[in-house]
Length: 303
Image 1: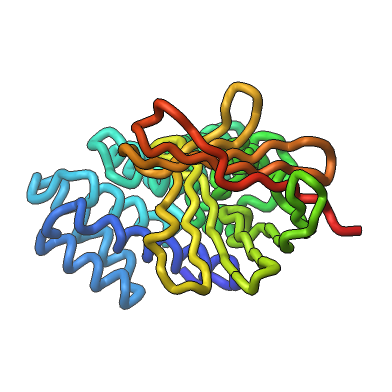
Image 2: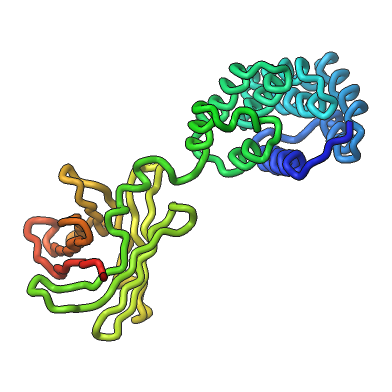
């Protein structure tokens, strides 16, 4: 059936790309699946449906990928009740990309005027966490336009949007354009901390009075719940600055550590007041028995 509108083609392209990403986890496709895929690429969706229905009925294939493929074929012919049945079967058989199946279910329910069920499925699609591909597929689908002011839809979009969880904003108190002073108030350099990659990365750009320049990338890693920093300067010797890892302490200061060992560094950033941040570095050479302050400075926002 003929479709029009750039939003529709965006959805199809994104879903096709996501399905290709899933293929390694789905195993080697059967001959029926391969034939149906080719028919779909040629726009022969009704023929693809015949091939897949015959295959699943005869138990030639009865896996999650086949049922998801069948749901997509039904979708092209707007057989929405069949879409819901096939996508549900794919989920029952543990389809490895459940967000995609829930998206198909949401489309089916919305097409049938079942607004509440559509919102339920959109919420389910976001349970796996942030996913920019799914986000674009949902936002670019004109069928969901009537839902876009609904709080449940907005919550789904927020959950799918990368780097919006509160943890990603824990280091935002360091953002700004600063004059850097030592504890006596003497200026020792300048530093600019800015957000990049849609809020996923804090980038530091340091200019020291001695001509030393350096840059660091600071990011939250959800896999282990830590903040991480990688720093490189214009001395060209990255080993001077080992990667740091840590997070907020009980008082709300950001504390990052170099790898464990007899010699180890600890860097602490503390919000002193609006527009003022303290950065202090300490080092131990005896496994943490004693610590020595090696750097202490205050970041003062420029006017």
